Length: 287
Ligand SMILES: Nc1ncnc2c1ncn2[C@@H]1O[C@H](COP(=O)(O)OP(=O)(O)OP(=O)(O)O)[C@@H](O)[C@H]1O
Ligand SMILES: [Mg+2]
Image (tube, rainbow, N blue to C red; front, side):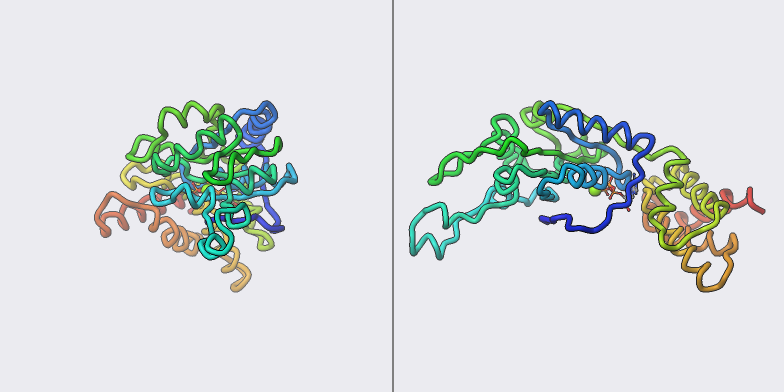
């Protein structure tokens, strides 16, 4: 759950909504306000915050929240073996990622924060408001001034059972929405995520069209994310490098395999049929 980002290269298209969102993230952090990036799955929330954290040059910790995650995971726990030998001393306390990031003055990314239990949400109130945390037997830990807390959430889930307490909501001060990007930006995203493999412009456009039409098809009740377009493009690029060419039927077959997994709300057979109709419709323009 706790992931340092390492030195892996981040391929980020910082245009359109991403540029606006990135700037708002910078501004919020600059004036000490806690930002939350919200949007449906796969629109680039995590990537945007990871890119921001990387650009600040600060330490980075990331935790995925769910209802079972306990505050002790974030804050830390006493190591019983050391406590037995030396009592409840600072050395016996094994710090969790939130305390570590506060002390390091790093960026803490709270992923899917809306899924956190109320118990866990409450443990964030003091760090967000006072930039400190009281650990029994050890005392109050104060955050380095460079400490930054950023959250992500999926708006569809905000209305569900796990949502923000009023107290936490009031501390998340800057809401940064992301949605599916415009055509040009999404095509660029698919292209950079396909590298080092490449595809001709017309193939990329076909892939984008299928994805866009599947998104619009109400009957499929699904969110076809940017990941779907990237996956179809990667399969198509591999096909091209193996066979030297790629036809509409090949693209349609890959689209089917990728998008099928995202669809819900129907019986499997009906679902396959609806999806085939969508794909056929999207490819029709290309003969
Ligand atoms: N601006 C962008 N530039 C380059 N790639 C992007 C961009 N936005 C999204 N992607 C790609 O789309 C995919 C999904 O992005 P990401 O994981 O950041 O989405 P997310 O909104 O955090 O999704 P989830 O809600 O499922 O956690 C990744 O492969 C990512 O590299
Ligand atoms: Mg994410």
